[in-house]
Length: 276
Length: 263
Image (tube, rainbow over all chains, first blue to last red; front, side, top):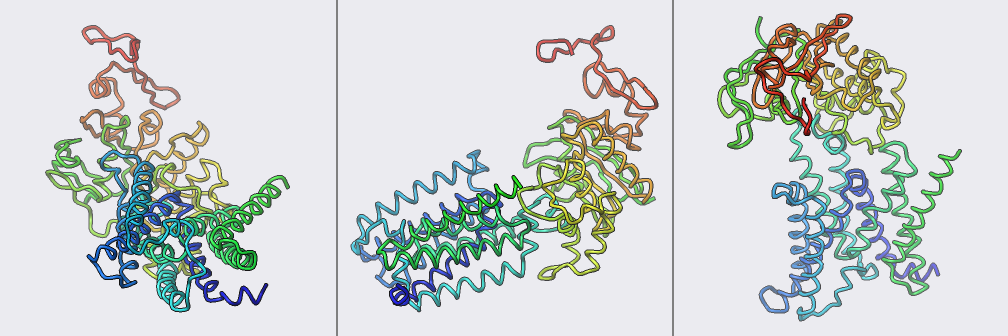
């Protein structure tokens, strides 16, 4: 079993990098109650990939692989900036409705574009991803995105925390709340755009939400939540991946199933603590 | 005495919509001013102009150089879902002094502990904020406002949703901080009866109207009846002024109907 897993170790390394990046940002996603923003940005990113593939098929752009990354990035960042600025609130549309509209339209557009793309990859690749296809080069690209994002989050932890926890007071102390919000959303869009291409919408959504929920249930401080979130994401990636390869299961859903199990364990522990 | 904040014929609003026009007043050092009025009357608009997040459409709002606010937000605007210890919350009041890319030092922690002691909740420093009562949370937020060593303490609806005991304790604490530290205080509230017995001056905002004066100048039947547009009585009990809407209008004044009943 181990030898089979080792055959795909490059893919496992890639999954671990994605798990690390998403589980750190996921703490803000869960605490700020914007979990579906993460899903909508991932879906927008997938629509960007679909558009790149469609345009490559029509000959408008070349079939250079970097085009899909550029389109995924552009769509994800545009979505992140849109949601970071409050979505359609100024037009009187409730935030959750804006997220729903974006998600549904992006999903449908992605499927429609892929169905007419010459390269014709199945649209469900965007949902379940293709973790096993990650190469060493892909992992290095993911690291090149993840490391700067994590450094930024370490350096500006107190700024991101303050504008997330109490934006009114932060503004009163001179913080440019809109800037810091957009910066946070920008890092979110960046990570999602790159992770999405390998992990798919479902797994990215999983890594953004479930590990942070596990952390929230087990930990009593911000540092502990980050620690538990990252640890549970890495654990889910290792166990899910290791089970999926020898048993010929799709890797993404296997990792998500393990994440769900960890949430259930955390929930049980929390209940026992409350009873005790 | 130079005013800390000075409104000079200021017209305030959003875009083209004017909320309050031509208001002039000063907040001198050592003042304890209650900014009072019903919800939607324009209190938040004045507050935003004071805090510098809203520029006047006309006129000027001038602040003394180097003026620093200690802000206590409405309790609902803080996200208690964050698992933060009380001391960490208070430290946020020093974040701007600590600067970018730097962590709080021991000196900042000592100041935060001292601020908690100052408002009587030093023993809660290691507790989770979301595990505290409403009154304790409010004390923690006041400590956070004080730890930045402000010139003006600004409290936005500090007793909203609190019971009688907590309300009395919080207002008593704010009064004590004003007297003990000679701290300039601006307290925003919709509850005239609560605020009037603690502040030195009242700025009353009602439906675009604005009046400022000492408690005695504002808390009288003539002024309040004129401002609110309904007949009111101002009674005094054990040295406390209490405003009540009169059920029977004086001769010549129309009875205002509220919800189908006489106000």
